[in-house]
Picture 1 (spheres, rainbow, N blue to C red):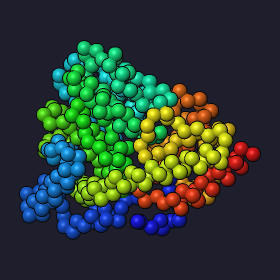
Picture 2: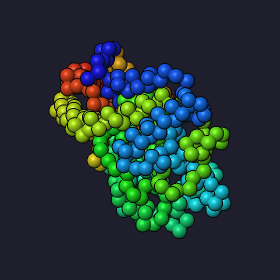
Picture 3: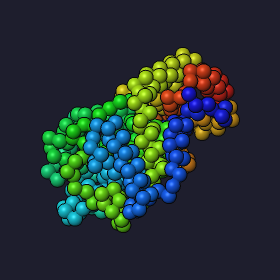
Length: 382
């Protein structure tokens, strides 16, 4: 268990996680100039390390190593996972139709917005208060020119899970591309990539790996067009010198999942349930946002009558660190697009805070945080 040197209770693990000590050691292990594209001794050694890391991750995901493309993180993975399927000469000529959720992360949402401007037709499916789109909502929306379904395995703000197995089956039967943003899933629970998934994006820093490193899986045999033009790296699918130290750290973080899961899933679930039950018993008028089954570590809670911004500031002063929602949007004062699109009353959205634990979070930390949260909410309500 890693020590909390700052004596803060960190409950914003969906924004980023503390890099694991073993991962950090791996990141810092490179002691030579390492460019996997170089033809000399150091280059060949770097290339071997790169491919070993790819094999490690492929083994965990139960896919072929050649199907994995390293990226700079979740945002690039979503862009490459969607656009490289659609921005090839044939797709651009035909344009076509895309089905997506109206509550996806901004890296998916804004990518689709860009494609709409390029002439693609987008149908946004309403997730509602359930918090995820359902397979039976998708089937009636499929047209002859539907090219892609884009979904999130887990919503990063509410933690609500999407039934990717059933949606993947639909995509496979209808011969439609399926992109899955799995950034908020990897590291939380064990899973396998369904056969009908065309591409799937991941990010290292959500599972105690280094920031600036991501991954995109592409189904074997799928034709894609690169977003970047340059060198032949990543089998000409993603140009640019690979972030080898970051990739080594990512592979180590994946390796550690074999050690920690599924035990860590149970640990996080127990903490989350204890946290929510205690709050409900001690405070009136609080609601969990998202009615569907959730991933083990996430609670998005509306404290009625409380301004979330004020609550977060006061909690920060007391050493409890949480957030409104996605870290990519937390710098703005705008209300959560995700919660608003779920049909939650704007007043309740303004009162909502996301708490997210990790495998290193302790019950003692949760119990201390609970006392501070309850006390602070009561003060604000007074």
